[in-house]
Length: 280
Picture (cartoon, rainbow, N blue to C red):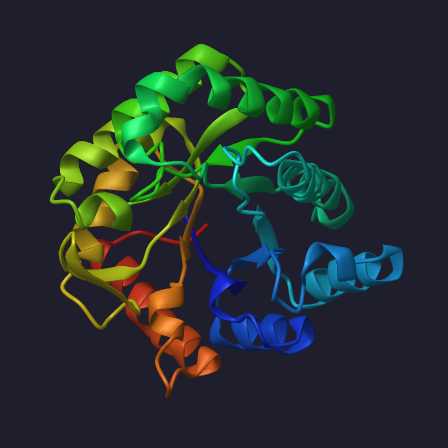
């Protein structure tokens, strides 16, 4: 396994500074965020900028395991849906342009929607996911679906059912365990259910049980990263463990994105050592 960091926690930081800082800390790779309000929003990434970012990653010896293109797949407004699919399919094209070596980054997204819509709108979601996955498959890129609290897909069972219905090797899971921890699901159970079908991960820290919970910077809360890493290794997962700092944390008046990355690296690199897991 390797250690990554998502620029989700760095919306205002220029990509040069983000890459430089994460490489200096010792991260093995990054997840690039391309949604609105970010310095790397997709519409700003012309051909020259893509070549420049690819060069920066190579210069700093950072892998790119994933692209965060989170967009609402349940939007019923035609124009909004068109924009959302533009970003998701554009993320697939970007994965080709920024690939470091033979490994293509996965394109991560959540679903949108609400948990109680699963039975009534499942077919609607499947149709849209299938369209996206078909496009991604044509380019050899994997879509990583993230179960998320409050979304139509919010449990391991639902995302496993989606994978079964779509039935494509180009649809996997972006396993963000925090969304299960805050509803009280045991770590062992969610890792056992999803590690085998995950192409990428997110970790945060978290405290409390929904609706009374808070997301935290890794190291601020009680999450047992050592146990989590051992469980992931036992299940045979060998990809990136990528830290993500939530918008909840970013709303703090004193939020410092570079300091958050530093704290995260110190916490997670120590956990790898204590778990006896080499990053390779």
